Length: 208
Image 1 (tube, rainbow, N blue to C red):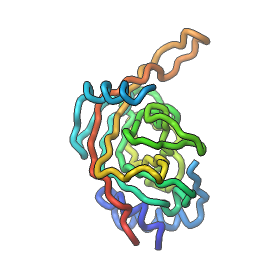
Image 2: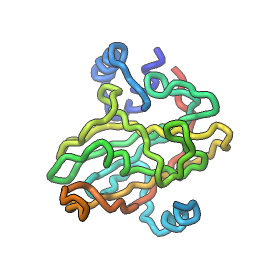
Image 3: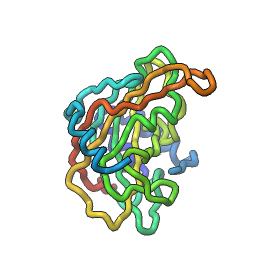
């Protein structure tokens, strides 16, 4: 069953009974995928380098980046699109702040250093590209992260298939600051600041 491919990526953190429930959930749930390069390289060189599987804290999140996969399509998450491929990264995330973190800020907490990224069918820079963030629990898009709750997530980026597939991929973890907006007085997560980078080997998505 193809849908098992997605849940199998989290085999180290999900027991068999949980995976069985998740497979059934996906069968009945609808899912969807919905600056300068030189400057990014210089910025990345100044970041803290973390190992895969190590916890990285970048307010308001503590993140553990695990594995990276590449595929022309991802069952239940990203159907095949002409001229595109997909990069999927598995992560564990905890909101370590005293307040919820909205889905937009969660997605903006990750960047991938790849050329040829696409979003909504258009080319986009690595700094601006936002991954689709999907919960491993039920393969649905992430909503707000609640304080103290640990979640296993999949980050999915779309890339131009004409680009060469690299052997490694660099994931940048970006922190934010909770403050008052100078424009309208609202309180939100602002000031995205890259905090750490994690180099991962990029492997083909496992077969069924």
